[in-house]
Image (cartoon, rainbow, N blue to C red; front, side):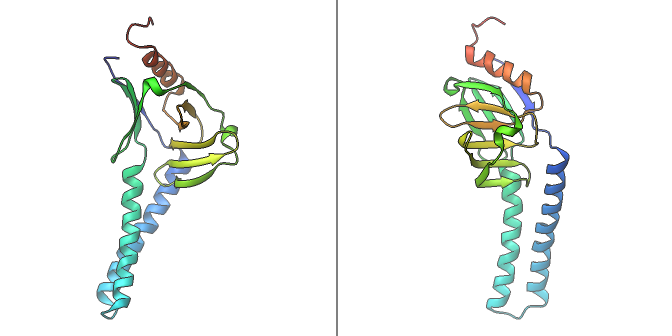
Amino acid sequence: MTHSALFAAPWDQKLTFITVATSALLLAGAVLATWVALTKAPAGAGRAVILLGGVVALTAFILGFLLAPRGYTIADGRLTIDRFVRPIEIPLGSIESVERLPADRLAGSWRTLGSGGFFGYYGRFRNETLGSYRMYATRGDGYVLVRTTLPYVLTPDSPERFIETLERGRRGPDAGD
């Protein structure tokens, strides 16, 4: 495949609310902890603990932002889940199938490592239907299941066009359109 196809990862209202509220709490906590530590807390271990709390809050905010899915790219023989840090690359040849995923197939999922609504729903998840899977989603509908040795759940802006483009890329450049 010689061209690239870009797909946005639009946020739904729920994700926007969770992200704004959590960001406000984390940033306010970081600022408040720094202010208290530098102006009110006596020198010593207490000040260090308060400052550490501020650093943890700021670090959580930064990591949430850097690891969140920003979009998806299909180009040069791979599907890339775009993130600011460590984009995830999946060779098209490793993809076994791709299909729309009804939201009810995610029922009973639990997060084993990741975010459940802060800048996205991303990381490692598990449920009885899919087993262990990776999710890089930004809304509660329009799910696409990309099966490799490990399933991926994504939410591109146009699920049908995404699936068509991914299937075309999997067939290779010589396949007819």
